[in-house]
Length: 487
Image 1 (tube, helix red, strand yellow):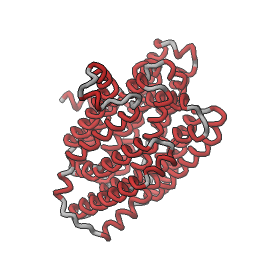
Image 2 (cartoon, helix red, strand yellow; image 1 turned 90 degrees about the horizontal axis):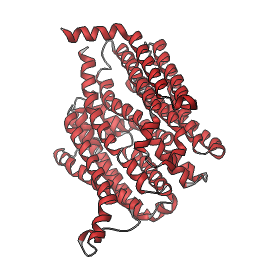
Image 3 (cartoon, one colour; image 1 turned 180 degrees about the horizontal axis):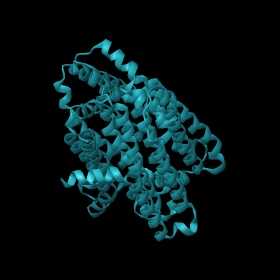
Image 4 (tube, helix red, strand yellow; image 1 turned 135 degrees about the vertical axis):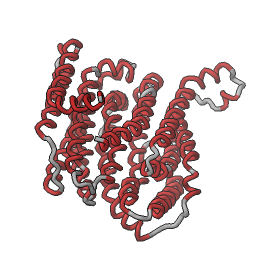
């Protein structure tokens, strides 16, 4: 039990470092919805979609490779220095090339050149922070990790509030003052990227001492092994980027109006509650998987963890969908955006499937067959692209939501089937499927049946029934935990 207790503690701290900043950043969604027309909100979403792709390219799987080799190599300093030097020089090379060809990038992406410039610098500064952050996680310094992560997001949010709300007032109140010199009308989207750039810069400054501490020795043989391990993760990352973010780009390319893309992107954010849970869990679980791979009962441990992930995830999933109409009033306060709210259940469930897939993917990481993860992700990307191209012309952004849940669902099933053949884990499939099935049924009933969607008494009853179902199935475990705490 101390094993799970330690996992819970680490996950809670990393969860705080991830969930709290994202919860704080949720303030930005209603701010953007309030300050930007749907067309400009779409512009921001499209640029951030491209940013995700280049984030994956600039990290090229080195973060996961770092954890793998840090836990298996005797000379850990060599792992730190080699991975740091690799990321540093690839980031500098990208900076030079991207700035040189920024006009071409602007034309190719359809993004204004000043936004491209800001994005290039944000990408490079974030890439340079990858190994310092990974080192904090590997050396079990979650509190430092959490403080820096939370501080960065708080600064970003405060700068957004300053630039979008306070600066126009200060500039108007004193036309000849300093604030008027940094205020530009109709530059709201630009200020959003400036705020991100300043936050990334300050984060890098705080982490920069790491670059002074290492010995800057580069082990080419070790690097080749790390790259060999990381390359499939890069491919998988690109495929994930397609699954999660390429829909915004495709919607524009397939001539969906910017207003519709803006509404879809805003309502998509309501589904981010499940992303918070999944991301926090992943941050805590990835080092745990590697460090306990050699344990005699590792498979049973993974099976137990997966079951409880499904239990917690099912409840969060159902809770968000049941109260989606209330949540959207806070996260998407402008009613004209609500036309896209029908995608919310699909996006929440899709991210839940992705969380389950993260658990199931442990098998190919442990036995060093990361290529399999790349293949599975490519299948998901193919499903995403195919369904987007088929469905968007017929049903618009709703087709993108269907494509997302289909992609993650297929990845989840494929990973389970392959995993049981190559690294059997004794999952309690009866309970897992029962929790998952009940969540889907209750979610569909509470959201898509109009008369029930407006009846919160029925929704609370459904939640209560689900909680009772959990208690009925897990009663023995829960009673053991209660008795242990009572002693």
